[in-house]
Length: 289
Length: 237
Image (cartoon, rainbow over all chains, first blue to last red):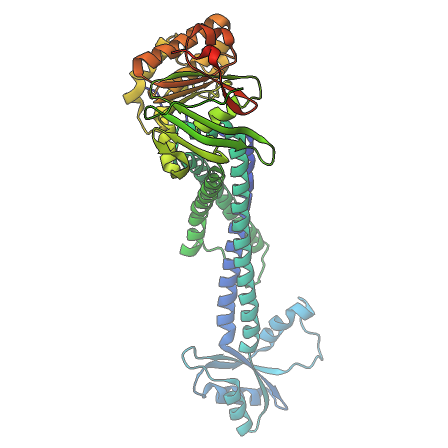
């Protein structure tokens, strides 16, 4: 006894087009989610790092005075380390402005102390400034946390935007599937009518479409998900190969959450397709007797 | 023109009381139709093109709801039923459409088995029954042929077998011989008559073939401009 022919005919060109559209939407959604998460992770690591840093700019003193000032700062509670930046470190810091040729002679350079604070009980800029002022130093202290706060705000906006993009793409996918199901229903109205008049319940007919679109969504979601993974990996790999030093470069680590996004996308696409198909078919059938 | 007066003697299989039908804003297609058909009756429905025969049959096989009046099938008022109950009623009705409405991607066997599949039965349970019925309508050698591979007459017989497979309490046929030659038409009507006698199925057939109506002496309902009129000439058994 052979397997019975499905009551809905095999997929046609319309479904191939729908497969492509859903796969493309899933690809964009995963790309948006992975990129946003990678960027957010990298930026979070960067902001955690800079939040524990301060720079002290010393005026009206020499290298020896700077070493004394660094020793005072090191002695403060909440300071992990403090050291005067060497000539080489200053040149590395200013390399983006002066190029690989180094700093021209005669350019006056400030004396800077790089301060790392304790993570558990960090000293603040006010404490450092007060201690140096009490010791007779003319110093300006800048906490990098000020910049990190701006970066955090930008990251928050980025996260909301990424979630918005994912939600928009998901809604678009559902709308496209609902539209396609409606078109499929109209194209197969003859079959639906015959089934309906043969006594098939709404749930029986809806199930035929649900199953078809669940599989389509699952496959299209998997195709989009894998493509997005490949493209993201390629972008990150080529950026790193080109020697980009940007710490804000998305970090594709393929950790648990990245894998979860990749695994969930096909299932979510399948469920969305199934849900849209069921809703459309049930709604259309309810318009009949 | 005399309005048709229904017979109120027994519990009817089909009962229409003051039924009217209107599509959108146009005039009534059917107006104040009153019918009572006894279980096991064999009735012809006739009338000129556009008289409302197909519309009346659509009401009977629950493809449409009347705009006025009520329909009772097997004692149940269809307007009061839930969707699931309507589906259950539809499973007691076999319909033969003029245009067959076979599913082209299914074989003759699968088309006939469709109502049983819809009812949730497995092939192992119905295979013999379907094969026997297809043999009975002369298509025992065409089980695996798909509709495009069948002649008009063969397709018609597949459609009839599909309508009969679940031994319906009511069989409705809309111009079932519209696409076949007179000999085949006669064979098909004999098949309906045999079914009516053997299984006591209530049968209503829309046709404008007056030769057939004269040959098979059965009661006739005649529609004229959407109104059911008595047709004394063919009031038979």
